Image (cartoon, rainbow over all chains, first blue to last red; front, top):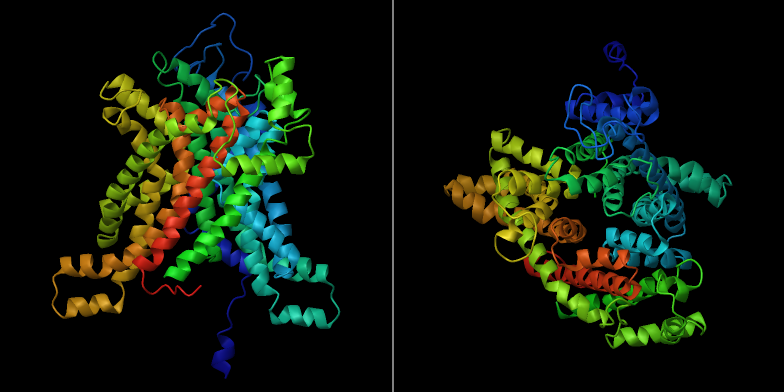
Length: 292
Length: 307
C-alpha cells in the first residue's frame, strides 16, 4: 500500500496539460508566433511602420523598386509598401475578429437552443434555414449580398458573419443534443436549475473546446475570404485605408513594370492565414477534438 | 436503392424552394425604394414604371414572391438591365467555360493529389511525404487570387511560357486550372495519405501480405480500394470551395465564366443577372451534392440505404 501512495502523481491542470502538449509541436509554435506577429503589427502599426501608409513622397510620385530606403519599394503614389502592408494588418485582423466573433456568438446561441430544445418547432425552423444556407456556395452568397447592399466595411462584416453562423450552429447543436442527456444535466435539473441555467452554466462550458478550435481555424478562412472580397472591390471603400486584398488588386495594373508589387500583400495574407491554421491544428490535436 | 434515390430527390424540393426564396429576398434587401435603386444611374421615369410593373413592386410582397416563383418555375428569371437579353441566356453562355475550368482543375487535383497521397503514406517521412505535407499546408493557406497573379507574372510575363489571360481549351487553360486546383489538390493529398495509412495498418492487409501476395496487389487491390472511400466523401464537399475558387480565378485570368459574369453584373448593378447567377450557382451546387449522395451506395455497399 505504501508503495502506491508514494507514487502520487503530480497534479496538472487540464489546460496546462493541453498547452504543454500543444507547444511541444514546433509547427504550433511557429503558428503562434505568426499569429502574434500579425496581432503585433495590427496593434503597434503606427510605432513600427517606417513611413505613413497614406501619404506618399511628393517628390517621388511614382513606383520605385525595393531599396534600402523602402524595403518593399513604393507604389504608384509614392507610398511606402512596407508601411502599407503593416497597416493593412489592422483591417484584416479587425474584420476577421468581428465577423468571426459575431458568427460564433450567434451560432453558439442558436446551437445551444436548438440542441437543448432539439425536436421542437424552433429547432426545425432554425435547422431548415441552416440547411438552405449551406446549400449555397457561401462565398457566392457573400459576394451577392455585398453587391446588393453596397461595398462597405460593415456590410463586409455582416456578409462574412452570415456565412459563418450556420456551421457553428450545427457544431454546437450536435454537442448540446448529446449533452442534454448527460447525467449531470439531469442532476442539475433535479436540484431545480432552469433551462437557461442549464444551457449556459452546464452545457456551454462543455462545448467550448470545439468552439475554440473551430473559431481559430475559422479566423484563417475569414481572413482569406475578406482578402478575396476586398480583392474583388467589395471590401472597404475608403481610399485611405490600406487593405491587403485591395492592394493586391491595385498592384495588378503594374504587373508588367513592377512584378514584385503584388508579392508583398499576398505574402502578408499567406503568413497570417498560415499562422492561424497552424495554431488551430495544434489546438485541435492538443485538445483532442475530432475535426469534422 | 430506388427508395433511397427517391427520398433524396424529394429532399431536394425544399432546398430548391429555399434557394429561390433566399435569392428573392436578397434582391429585396436593397436599401430604399427597390425600383429606383435597381434602375440606379439610368434616371428614366418610364423605365422606373416599367420595372415596377414587371417586378410587381406596387403589389404586396407575397404576390411579388408568388409571381417570381411562377416565372422561375418556367425558367424565366427576367432580363438583363444592361443588354435586355433574358438572363438565363447570358448565364447559359458562361456555364460551359466555368464547367471546363472546374473539370480541368478537378482533374489536376485528382491526378496529382491521390498518387501523391499514396506515395506519402507508403514512404512515411520521406521527401515525398514532407512535400505532401507542405502542399497540404499551403493549399489551405494560400490566397488563390494571389497565387494566380504570381503565376501570371512568373510563367506569363517573365518566362513567357504561357499566356497571361484569354480563353480556350489549349495552353490558355493551364494556369487558371492549376491555380484553381491547389486547394482541392491539397485536400485530396491529405485525405488519401491519412486514409491510406489507416488501411495499411489493418489486419486484412497483413493477411494479404501473409498469404504471399505481391506488394503491388496488396496496395492497389486491397488497401487503396478501401482507402478511397473517405476520399470520395471529402472530394464531394470540396466542390463548393472549388466553385468559389474558380470564381476568383476567372476574374484574374479573364476567363469568360459565371464567376466573372457575376462580378461584372455586380459592378454594373445588373441585379436580375446577379439573382439568376446566384440561383444557378446554387442549383448546380445542389445537383452535384445530390449526385455525390446517390453515388455513395454504389461505391460502398456497406452504407445502409433504408433511409
